[in-house]
Image (cartoon, rainbow, N blue to C red; front, side, top):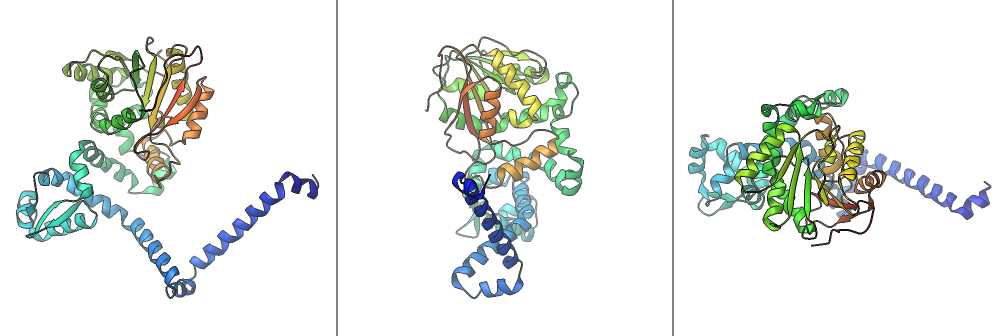
Length: 394
């Protein structure tokens, strides 16, 4: 291609912009790495505000582990539950927490600085805006407790990266490394099943705010754990038929939980990598399932879902997604490293998931808006065939 032809095709402008951008980034990096430039920037009002903001961001990166451990201490000491009934004086809190008053104040003041607690009149401490949320959402505290396993794996991040797998997190999710997940016993699945059940109501609320299920006849929840998601769906749509599929040991836990809740749910145990999914549902949900698996396994799962659904049936895929606007580094940094420690799975963008749905034979994949995209986003797609049920906005 001649230069004139390239210019006509818009190629050269693209190359020129990319080259200009690279030079600009190189200049920025040299300036920010220069102590002299930083001293000069601190003398200029606008540059000083930017420099202070970036300094704070850098310090937060360095101190982030300490912040998370303050939160972990508050959760382990059940501080938020203790203050849910009202503020308490520092000396009374120290006695209740079995801490010396001086060290208790260090924790309390640290929690105030992180908006977990708030100072009240009379040397008392009460819940802060973040602590109040944690006190009202048991699933958050359960996740914080679980993060002790992640912290152990991240104690040597370079070793984790070189190994490509952690130990503590992988042990917590035994199906991630099991040659035959369906053979796992009750003790092996108890901890992670309980964690998912505790944290699932937050996710269920997001999905129910985004998707209407009253146009479906029956919903199959694949990887449904102990049935917490189906419990939430049943509370909103009591006439909806319900099915659940998970590993045999997990399915046994689901039967007990759902029977205790008085719900008639058809529960099937199996391994979706080799066992067919139950048929008869016109909607199928995958809630926080796909990102736990690598591409080959996801293709197998989506193909199985496609076979289980009738023509016009609907697939609902809900999970945190990489590249979500406003989510910051949560997708790439948090979930990227967490799933590495787990030993399999990866965060994916909505576009990539839509592409995988299309490859599996689903049609018209689209995002449905959720109240808190950072927590979970929802993709819906239809099995090809005559128009059937459809997902509507709430």
